[in-house]
Length: 391
Image (cartoon, rainbow, N blue to C red):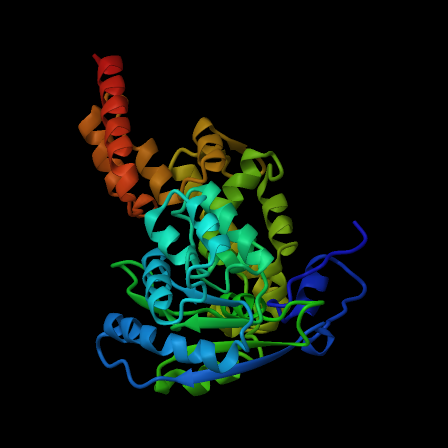
């Protein structure tokens, strides 16, 4: 491998170069952007204690921002939930619909199987999210690229996986609901810049505009954030046990010495020497850091061994995966979850198995309404299968 291209949302490129043993690293800042990007951060009052109502109230400001900044060119509005994309699109179809009785748009709308999307398409407006069937998503992407859809409401996944640039990008709100356990959280800088980067179409525009809608208290923070990124740190410490198990399962690591040498080749090792305080370390000598890494490695290996996931001899000269190690690696099972599964008695019935699975935090995901019936049927099927096998 001779060249590695890294996203501009990762600012500490020198650390990546060190991690990959590269001799040179080149950084191309925004001055190299083919289309100049102008960013506006708009503070729209104070959200108080009810973030939901504040986010809902942002909808009424969207039409004015489109008229002010779009110059009649294509616009993408990034919303943070699938429901929001549909709601905002429906409101825009009423307030600033572009189509009138255009027969071209009417024909385009007939190609969709979703009534709410049809109503929006007739006005030159659409929404795009993972809940749409692939045929409808492709229809929206196709006609937005052709310019028939003037305004597209989408979730942030559009910024990551689909190349649909627009002249204007509006980010509706900077707080995202992450579930009952986490509540509302601020947008991270990488996601924000990915969405902003959709503004400006090379070959079609000489400039692009990004508008960030937020509350007045957060305006200054996002003005600063839109012009630069925080240094990216390693996430390995939070998943060290799982990652070590994967390397053991693949026979990359066969003893403790190899485990420590493997850890020294990670991005985490590069960053911990530069920013030890971030990882709650208060020493700077390399010997101290190596002692810390050795301790972390040995603790993770002992945890895996005591949970009967791997075999580890007393001297650490031999590390061998067990069947549970391969299962944990192949299916990306968190350590605590795999530990609970291994601890199940061999004669466990459906009730004990389902209780164990229900207590695993890593598999608590909301089920879509359309998936509830099939999920329930699958649970019954496997429960009966396990019961019949045990009896």
